[in-house]
Image 1: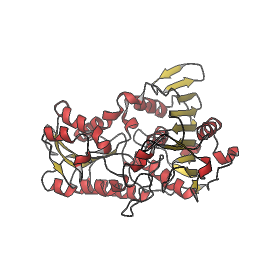
Image 2: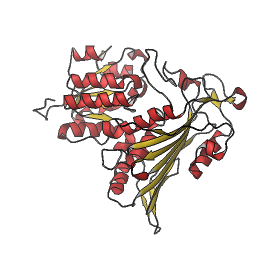
Image 3: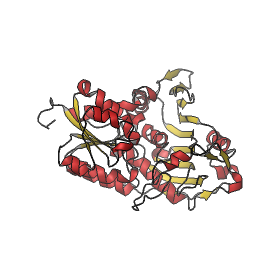
Image 4: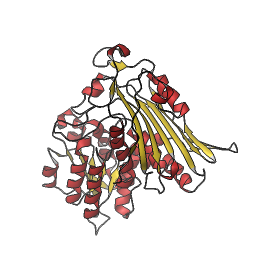
Length: 403
């Protein structure tokens, strides 16, 4: 699609056809006519590892070993990046330099300085960059945020979220950067539940607290307690307190070392209402007002997987802004960086405090009782060290540098 002829099909390429990229492949193969685009190629140095490789081959989609080889053959209008965290900044900048719009999977990047480089590259190219925090593109979250911005709930006071998602050995063995602070090349990745598997739920708090439809709240200060049960570089358990703009206090609790899966539970307290999602089966977002009235916004799970792609295509066609771009995604990156500075050391749980469940490769290393500790922290708006938990280590409160 040329800039001067918006009736032409949009040319789309997917970078990373394995891993999370496999969720894009069916959409790109089946929805081209309805959304008026052409799937012009995939990029992956090891495409044979993708469980969608036969589908791509049957559809005669060319697979290139690198982005350079892709651009030597075709110029996509939109590049979808579903690649490791440490590659996001460089690959986004490369695509923009070639004149492509970008939909980059979450998180935006490993460090705030990388996020700033992406913003500079975007502004120089005059193109759109969307970041794939899929909840932000869902109709349920957009309706919630619209009401928040309209003042329906009054002033926001406090936000709390807890996610208990056990992960087994295969999760940390799936690539060479899982649970790492840096990859083999020495690039920052800061992989953790805060920055990867549960990043959506931290971002969601920041996004709902933002003062515009395409903005998130600015973190001012962060206090973090970071722990690990697994044999990894970084942490698998975290408790964070965030001081946001306008005096809002936010808490985020997460672990991959629990014994039971407990899907995201969150409570956002406003002057005139409380927003909650506590049903782990359908994750409906419900507002309960002080006068007893309730409003059900539905669940982000209804349209969250494909909404980010269709929204990005529409924004490219109309020249409109993206719902979740660099400005909306950068505050999460700032929090991730700050929490690593706040915890002067990541506490490794002693072997005698661990319990190993199951057989390899599905074996899970757990800390008995940690699920209840984090649920108690959630209910009391406190960090583990403040509740006198014996293994807890207090973090330092750090100021978040502007980007």
